[in-house]
Length: 282
Image 1 (cartoon, helix red, strand yellow):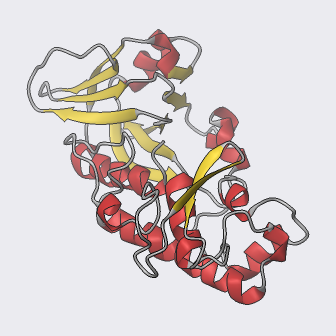
Image 2 (cartoon, rainbow, N blue to C red):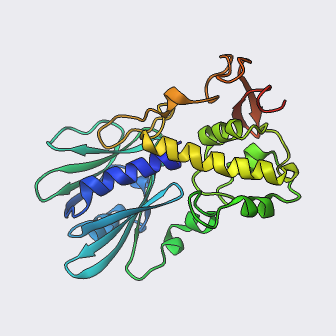
C-alpha cells in the first residue's frame, strides 16, 4: 500500500497537473470506486462543471477543493488503498481492464484512475460539510509526522504502559498518520530499536531517536518520489527511488549496510518486519 511519501508524491503531481482543471466529463467504470454519494451518477454530476482549486493530503487521504464559478463546490476525496494510481493522458487512449474512473477537461485531456485490486475509494463532500463526516476514516487519524503535535513527548505519552510491539504501534494510524510497513521498518533500524520491543519500555532517548528517524526517512523518501517496493506509480507511470537506499526493508538475508549481519525477516502481528539483530539490539 502506498504510504505517506508515495501519497504526497501523488498530491504534488496532481497539484502541478490539475490545479485549475475544469472537469467537463466524469465516467465511473466500476461503481464500488465511489464511496459517496450513494450512486456513481450523483458523483459524476457533483464533479462535472467544477474546477479543481488545489490538493491537500491528510495521512494517506487526498482531497481536492472544488469550485463552480464563484461558488464553493465541495471537495473530491480519494484514498489509493493498495494499488490505486492516477495517470495523466494527453491524448485519447483506450482504458485498460483495471480503469475505474475517467475524468476529462474541456481540451480532452484525461485524468484516469486505475486500480488493480479495486480497493481504492472516492468521495464527494458537499459544500460547507466537514470532510470527516463523509470521509469518516479521517476521524481516526493521529497527527502528521511533520506537525508540531508529533514530537518525542507525544510518543512517550501515547506509548506509556503499552505492551504492544513498537512496530505494531507505528502502523496504527491513530498514533501517527501515514506510516506503513516500509517506513516503520526503516525508522526502527535508524533508531536502533528492535521491532518487537514493548512500546511502553522505550526510554526518552530512544523516543527521541525514533521521532528523528521517522521524520528523516519520510523526508528522504518524499525527496526521491517514494519507493520502488510498492505498486505505487506517479502520474507519469513511474515509481520512486527510495528502494535503492533501503537499510533493511526487503533485504532479507543480505548483509546489514552497517555491521554486515544478515537482515532478518520475522512475522509480527501478521506483517513482515525486516531488521538487523546486531544493530537493533536483538
